[in-house]
Length: 462
Ligand code: ATP
Ligand code: MG
Image 1: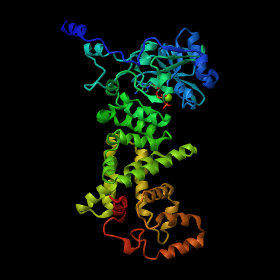
Image 2: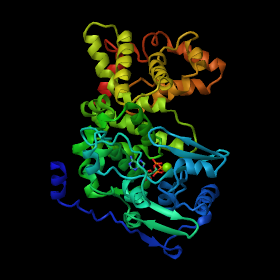
Image 3: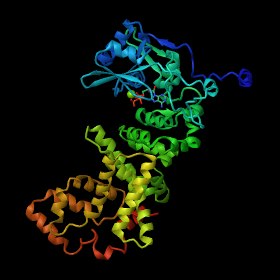
Image 4: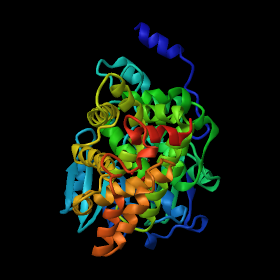
């Protein structure tokens, strides 16, 4: 009773300018999209669902990217049909997902995702319900309420992601002024930014991802709450953060993404130890990570494969020296200290971002390689060349050098070694003399303790 009375006294919900219940409709002459540009399978699904009496549209990233002249990654369909109704229409359809059900329609290698219109979680109803699907801080834990087309538009994250294209009538339905924001190159949350980040803090990462990918700005009101709310990311399950981090750094715009994450203080909750290194040794840490990411972006552009292990190895490497030194100061010898520090750092990192074992193993191997590459005498150099991790280890060495680590020309030595013939190789090993037993550098340069670790800090110059 009392609750009802309170609710009736509440001020009406503020209608934010970028929410509307009737869409702006853009006819085929008012936009640049053409049905033929979209996946014919996705268009076929929309036609079939419409013929069966359901509403169906192409939606989200594919409409946004097409308007910007970018080739979409995939094509998503939104419909009023329930997953079971969708499945009944297509032989090649599979219902997937537990948290919310979706239908995947398969056409050889292409998969079209068909999602039923979903609704926002009306807060008032939730407060009356015992089975709230939000946690104490307002984060949505379940998100599986079906709704109308308007509901579906309002629960989406950004205005530019809430555009619906009907390939039959060739019209765009715009419920959130997304076309306006595409024209002005702005990432803007639908609704109240603070509330939307609270519901799902990952939206802060998505804002950065789209801003970097599309070269858009983040609209002022959507950007302002990010810093104060960044720590909410700590509540996100580490497995989800792993997926999001991969999307952030394998988007082809990782270098820009990194800058933005740091500026908006989102890097800290994702990589706390690396962030500490960034504060302690800004130049070295920043250069090493940026170089790795610029390289990753380039490889993606060239269609070359990139391994998440190399990426994580680089993101975490600057955090190692402090740990190695701490263990050494407690009396641990250099090599075990390095091993222990690597183990500690990776397990701590996995509490934030659940890096699967298939990647943590190669991270360790890339790091171990850094210990082994200086030791080249006898048959060691040839054995290292045959090691399956040699290439990654060697690339990583070059990366360290590009960030200013002093290795006494080790990278160049290995570059030469790979290029020369058998007898030249023998000469190179002979010329090493005694200087390679425990490190790359000649004795006069070597200081006590782990040489490389000290070099890392001294190269930072801070
Ligand atoms: P991409 O090109 O990266 O695939 P996308 O916009 O398609 O971009 P997806 O992650 O595939 O992004 O999500 C599809 C759509 O689902 C988005 O366009 C958005 O409308 C909606 N969406 C995804 N994640 C969220 C979220 N956390 N909160 C609200 N809406 C979301
Ligand atoms: Mg998508």
